[in-house]
Length: 160
Image (cartoon, rainbow, N blue to C red):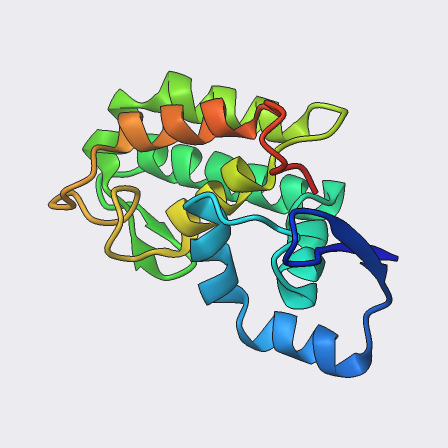
């Protein structure tokens, strides 16, 4: 049972159908961007499903593993890559403590805010972002610190 915004400031329980699962999967990148910017996970059935998936321990472990691989790749060689995409080695090395903290927070027991998890996923998958592009307008350390901060459940309704 998913809780979905009823449009009047409340929520209603809904069951997801096959079409909802497909929509969530096919629009995952757009939903992740919306969630990372603070959209309510209860806005649609597809976003509620995606939020559930993102905040699962399996997804959080996968994201933490990706962060750890990026850090290990930056430490191990002069030209680092993650799943074929180049890494901004200098930024990663300068942000190693923050990246380690984000990884630890993702692996911690208990609920987390979908906003911070979505930000982490985008950090890992956006080839134009600061993890992969040293010329990115975003600074890696600031982006990682924001994701750490936004993992906290703060009563804003962003928990999944």
